[in-house]
Amino acid sequence: MKTKLILWIAPLLLAGMCRVQTVEAADYTITSPDGNHAIGFTVSDGRLRYNVSYRGTTILSDSRLSLSLDGEAFSDHFQVDSTRAVSKNGSWVPVVGSKSSYPDTYNERVIHLSETTGDMRRLILSFRAYNEGVAFRYTIPEQAALAEFTLSSENTEFQFTGDHHVYWDDYPQAKYTKVKMSGMGDHAMRPLLVETGQHFVALCEAGSLEQYAPMMLNRHGKNCLKTSFRRGTVSAKSPMSTPWRVVMVADSPGTLVENHYLLQNLSPSCAIGDTSWIKPGKVWRSKLTTAGAKAIIDYAAANNYQYVHYDAGWYGPERDASSNPVTVKSDIDMRDVIRYGRDRGIGLICYINKIAMSKYDLDQTLSTYERWGIKGVKYGFVDWQSQSDMEFLYSAIKKAAQYHLIVDIHDNFRLTGIERTYPHVLTVEGILGNEERATDDNPPENVLMTSFARMIAGAGDFTPCFLNGRVVSRAFQLALGVVFYSPLQYLHWYDQMDQYAGKSFPELEFWKEMPTTWDDSKVIHGSIGNYMTVARRKGKAWFVGTITNDGRSLDIPLDFLGSGTYTARIYKEAPKDKKHVTMETLDVTSRSRITASMSSASGHAMWIYPTESR
Image 1 (tube, rainbow, N blue to C red):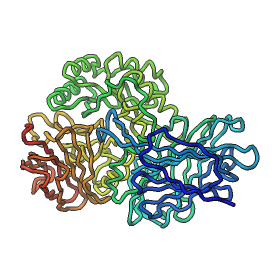
Image 2: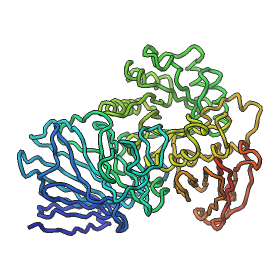
Image 3: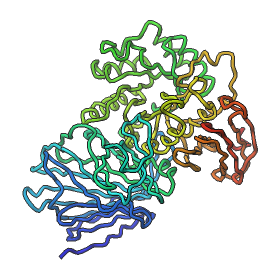
Image 4: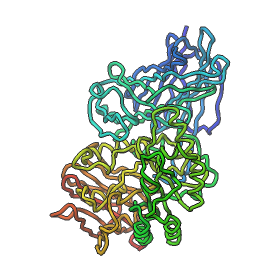
């Protein structure tokens, strides 16, 4: 006879308090400390299933948990041997972040299982319920029967209760499409944003992928998605744990963006002892000349930027395997540029792609960069499809830390919270940014899908620009620096320094004053594909960015302000020309409301600071 055990886990138990017991029960429920999220686990006829609910509403009904080892199913004939309950109520301080500290509070149950037939192989399932969402992972403990094995596939199901809308992309730099789950392509990237009608759900991957392959989500039956590897299989030895599978649920999509730190909570703590050399900041890309870099260094020093960047081509044609990454093209005096920047407090970041990273000794390359005085690297042509891709990338990330180089990862990689472990990884691409024009593949509607769906994964290098011809609204571009969180914020990406010669753009004081890391971040309001307002605080100053697809007037409450009187510097589109920005100054308090009136494909920005502080 099967006995059902109802478990209650006290929210405020200290981390590490636990008990181990042998049980006959096969049904468990783990509830978040605030009571909103719950994940249930069931063993029925030897098969493993889970479900997820939010405030009593079923989000995922019974969904299979299954692995395939060495081409055979590892999913049936299981029994529960013991369980262990753990609770944590804490927080941690990131080296760089969207908040000064992140809450880390959860209830967890670790369930030890074994097969009832054959070699009686063992499996551990860990389930956590946070206030931000739920997560689970598989662990194969050390055992003779699985000393070495091939994980042929991971077959985790996400069984939804209806044919919901999803914001679907099948490639990390693809355009988003809002479709029914049944109408999306065969597979989707993660995170995947799902709209259930009442709630918004994000399916994510969290934790280290160093010895794993990235997750995709495939259509699998009615209203169901199933995990697969993007490419290949995973070779492993026991003990091994998979990354966490994460289900975040919220009443508004902006809350999911605010809670991106959940992926970091599920990742290993910082692996770097001394982090004092890790400096976030604003970057402007230079022409591949000495004079071009010096001109930007002068601007950067005068306008509170921190870096100048040499992109592809500085060491030779980027697609040519014979381009040695420690050579420098004749138009660049590298030592002079680095010295000139150092004297003015500006660092140099340089591009290097996987062709050069893999053909030439990476230790020698990166140690040379450190000796020269380069402060960071942008890794290009990064693959993230297979286990070997991840092993290569993680090795490159760790080597960069060894030589005190901050990192920007471009092309197809998306974060899974590893910036907690390696905080010198300041930003990544995996985003359809300003490389595509608003008039072509990346209209404002898509930007406003990206600002929700993609940013659940963490930092995104969107590359705002200002004067380039691709810009439709300069107020829109100003706001992007706040809407898209990126501790390494590349600005003016397609702009050239000579465009600014002899001209004045007073509205650029917004970027001058704008930080790139924050003490607090809030999504004030938003509608996916339509509009979004984000407010971020550093010290006592707030920066607020709004972008819109259609023309509209938005009422922005300032109730996030503290007590006292503040000065609001407002940057908005000129009435007759959205390529120009007008400025005004208002006295405001926490009871004030600002109306942001915008035409289509435009934006609005505010810098708000205590009046007595200026």
